[in-house]
Length: 434
Image 1 (spheres, helix red, strand yellow):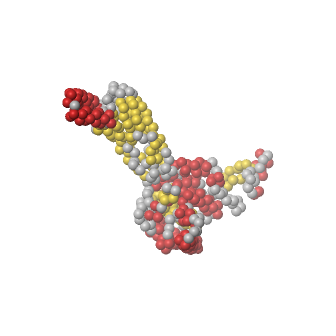
Image 2: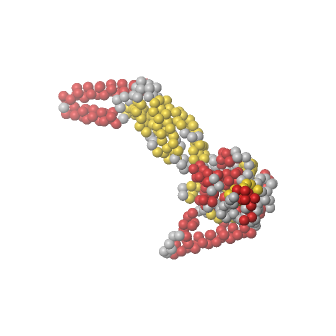
Image 3: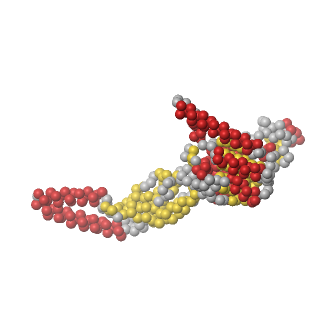
């Protein structure tokens, strides 16, 4: 409970009148009368506000929110009293989340109902509590304001950016991944598993044309083949301190999860089993499955993972994976490595390549590429330019060593990861490497 500006100004005026009465004794009765009147009004107004029942409130929003996207939240207020209410409403959202249209002033008539809307933008994935809603109720005369907190416990679940992932998956569902730069490579000859007949498309080979169906339909008809099914895709995800680096306001782990979910969706549609193991931070394990519900299981397993402060150990993760999954699979290891990590990464690659086909997606910071575009004006700029080139040369050397071991390596920026992984997945499927 605190006085509003109206009451403060009235007290200032009363004080000024009292000071004036020191020099003008005739003002003393007026000052005393004004003080008694103000005290009576303030006490009556305070009592009215104290006895005023709080409005009832309910909140409507999705239990799962996408990361970095503005989501609408609706608040329904009901005035249970026969008094007119003036108040301000502020929902107790997680402190780090951005908001629009909060707080909001509200006027409620007797027994009236009002619906308010504001927008919430999460900046982190995971579970976040919302404890209640703050109301600042004004008294009838506007002399007092009382803060009341209505308990409205709820847990928000912030998932990876659904808007971005759904854009990719919708295009995948419409067989239009090529618009994203996802290239469908031509087969070398005809595949072994017939899928369906369809109209001839530019780029189809003559060997794909079904001449009997063409003569029957009086237009060119091609045979369509599908890749071998019942294969396994397994993600080995680094959640260590390297994945805390941020580009364009997002941690590398966020981009890695977006890419992982996109490729998992594509693989499930191809009939492959998808599994997951994390290391270097929170430990999560999902055995490979190929049911359509597997994507939901994957989302539930990774949506709240945050990069840790640990130093990731890929060799230990590789040993655990070999013990848990002996059957051959395509293993996609997503990490952000440095020179000091290369020995452990090579040892992990030597272990995994004996039984699995290994793809290592090694992320690098956008600041590295940006530093090469800075004009060279002095000695310090020149030294930085050559130091970056030396670091990139050493990085390429380590990647060549991994390729010599039979590992497929992707060296790319986090934003390039989703499309690069899908392209590599399709290339491996069409080459029959699994």
